[in-house]
Length: 397
Image (cartoon, rainbow, N blue to C red; front, side, top):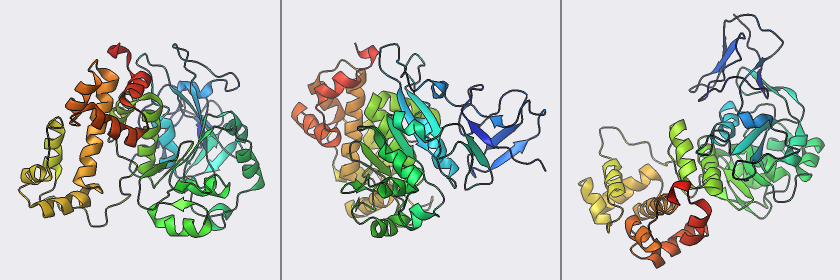
């Protein structure tokens, strides 16, 4: 059996895709399986030097002391991913894949994603391989966003809510205004540093009771996918980290860029943060009628008035049965889901068309500009005009 070699984050190799980490030419190849996320090593020529090296986004090697800019003058956003021993590989890969994979229409990287650890060098994951991290905690002070993925739930931070002095000092030295993000139980690190005191936050649903007992000053919401509290964002477990990172891209660069990276990574482009973390009842049997047909029909008729009776009729169900089954399958009510689809449609039209605000409102099913303005303000905190001014694509003028 060939022993697994560490995966190194830092130096550049040929661009890879998906969750496969491809080694440089003439070196062994480590493959992280997308299902099990376990590391195996395939035979290859003898390595030219110690330690195999994976590709990271081109911008990861940028000099963070001198922030780089895109062709239009926009600064490249620096993202530091803080890892600790026991880090869960899936969550570790989310920021690099979603943020690191987001580009302008000209192929420029919008984010520079850098992995860092309390001490550069080998870091144990909770799988059967280690990763070799190039950067230390000094990267936190230079970052525009810090992301803390989950780690194996052991040690003082998860058991006692206590950080090492080294990590506490590094987090305290982060520049004011830096965006702080946690994925799954990475929220323990933010809470232990006092960054969640008095704020709404979430974590994996299995840990919310323990989290609340350990950090009573945090306003824990156990039922949502993620919480956006401005400069501090927290997500629920595993796949909710994908939703949160797509939300960051959408917030920073609009729905078009977020939808593009979602298509490339083959994930749903938008699940609202307020959606339930998990379905309380078992997933419906494939032989039992579901609400998928009604949802598809609604997507094709958003510009029309749609009633609950209309949706139930698509599935030949009573309104009561349809409403119950819809909530079981999506975690939200039909009305909430429909409003979110219309908001998303309006965002896309504001970004990519020359339609007036009144026309966008009618096309998205809101009827009037006033109704669109009310719903967009509630969902995003901005008016249609302000949203268009921020996120209009070049094709739109």
